[in-house]
Image 1 (tube, helix red, strand yellow):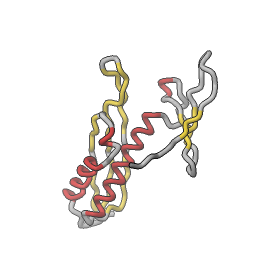
Image 2 (cartoon, rainbow, N blue to C red):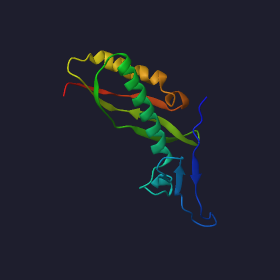
Image 3 (cartoon, helix red, strand yellow):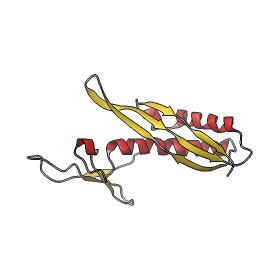
Image 4 (cartoon, rainbow, N blue to C red):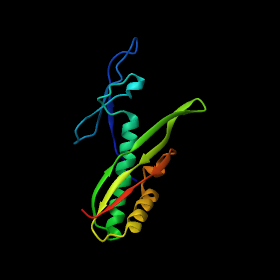
Length: 147
């Protein structure tokens, strides 16, 4: 088992309109300015929970894919993901219903595209963030072979 402690700090007053801005911190790392999404009165220049969930999934999937690519002897040269988090209301409850991962994966000349796609799909099975959420995960990679 591994634990990852985090501190979330906020001050203000909810007696009237209040700030949604807070600071997330972890010892030894830069602080992260967080808020709610602008639709919910938050600061659009700060990370919101939807951003962070999407970033967590995208990063976990990416790192798992790289580990599998190494294992499968694929020479990945670049990975540029454009993820989208969909927040919706279902049965009166607001939740993340879908996260789309749409990376462009650049691999060395002579690479087997099917093998790259297989590693990308398998990364979903081993990504612990993906295994921890109930939202539908849509995976739409574009594979580019060569520079």
